[in-house]
Length: 358
Image (cartoon, rainbow, N blue to C red; front, side, top):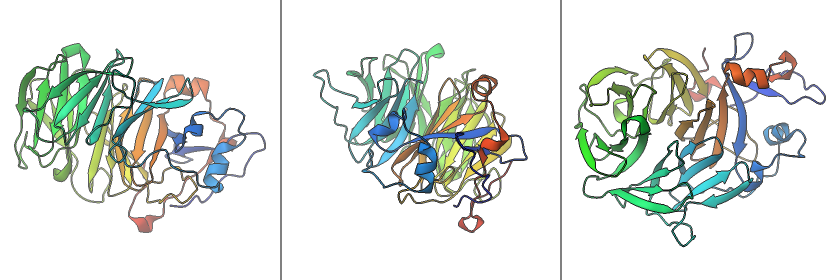
């Protein structure tokens, strides 16, 4: 991916990146990236985004093999299977710490994968090798484990506080497993296959405000939607390179405003749908990190989360970086009005196989 057709820099004004690009009405903005701890503190840094985009000495990466991400607005939690830890990026304190044991030491996971944060501040983490979900309280120390015999290879997960549910994708068993928030196994559904309610290595799941479940059926290259009893409602997506299709999708998140974001790892992009499955927008293109940051550039994006402010958090596993995008909500635009002179236009190299469509 390259940055082409860029607007000239305006002295004293930060340059901004939007999708779709002008003259279309923008809906998503690239906001920030997190590579090292000092990225949590931009204060006093002039033109930090331009320096990152157009050249900057590559620092030592904070992450080894990041997989998933969750944010409650104040904290950003990132699972890192290479480090066997879950990093907590505290945006207020501008520091990095770790989910920990009761003794305060960083908790060492076998292989952390999915992470979710509930409205009370509890964090839930799947460990694919330990075959468990580990629950950490608001103080970020371990309070409970869930699973074991009921799970073979837990990956993605979602919390529904309103219905006292924890949904877990059991990838190896091709099913969704349901617990209550005390850890009791309630029921599960699914088997391997292409039919309704069947799966082929599902990897992630999320819940909308009405309690409908969106399961990412990865090797069937689709999203399946269910009610809270496991009843199939609809599906969307297919394998391919056309708009609204996937190659190897990895992560899914549903926004408070009713939009669905799916990361397509192999295609190096993310795709946005309505909750009804209508295709809306594709953002991304292939970019290997070599010391500069490219808004919209990815190299195996994986986990994704959308917080209550409609910020989109995406883990780029191979680039070992976490990116922050933003849906342009009415509230966000009031705080960050768009001046056309502030806009850079990202351009995707079509030879890499990623599209850039409205």
